[in-house]
Length: 326
Image (cartoon, rainbow, N blue to C red; front, side):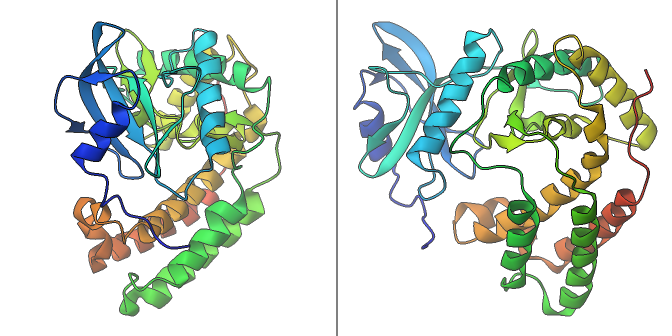
């Protein structure tokens, strides 16, 4: 499959696409921080009311229409349960729109400050938030969205990296040696557990804080273990993570049973994310936005740091799993 770039997606086409709907654009386009897709904020008039909107153009060949619509339906289902997710707007009952080969969606523009990972009050709020989200998520399953699997997060990424010319030759043996060890230990510890619908990419960058949390991106939603939406809330030394975990779990339990049996999956899932992220950058390197945004990815120093990070992750995989203390 050939790589697609957004080179033809200029301002005129973006405005024409937006105004193919009953929307009148009143301002210029402000590009927002998104690399996988292309996202712009603007002022507009909709139904004779002034508002601020965000338009998101999906990267072709990544998701099918069915997968995108399933993402939208999940967001709208969560909103119907008063869970603060930014869901796409609908026009004539449709949330996914097509224009000259591009697919796009419109969202309300929401503001807020960044989630503070070391703020226990905010972590407690997030525990309740994720517990509520998972309580709704368990009611149904995705039919078209992918799942968190070893194939997608270990095997396929390692194959992509093995075929890449970006891994420096002089570091090739050292990098792939530790990578294979991490992959082996991860596979040995990634046990089968029940899957639910997930946010899938529940890191602080996808959370806005304004009188409480709000998720702004369900682009990576998929089926998987519930702990996948929880472990990225943990940071710092082990003692800090234990305190954070207790805070989240106790709040989560107000709405859903905390997946205590999945705690041994935290370090395997962390390893899978590390490997998948490297391969994602390699896969997207032909998109001009990526070398500009991630110039360090092609430097020897980055790969030296990854060797060290993988060694540290290998050690973490062999440590006892985190346990609840409350």
